[in-house]
Amino acid sequence: MIEIAQEELSDYEMGMLNNLRKWIYEKRRKALKVIFKKNKVSKDDGILDIQVKLF
Image (cartoon, rainbow, N blue to C red; front, side, top):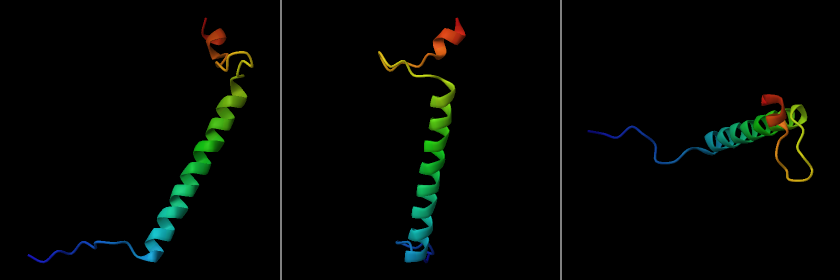
């Protein structure tokens, strides 16, 4: 049986994957910034003050 799968990605495909990786990273960073803006971080110990809202 002949193998159809490629062993390596083309330069174009590698470029597209790198762009996707960067896009995902940026979206995660933006989401974390929004979360940290919503929930203030305590300057003393670095713990989120979200627990105050829970109790």
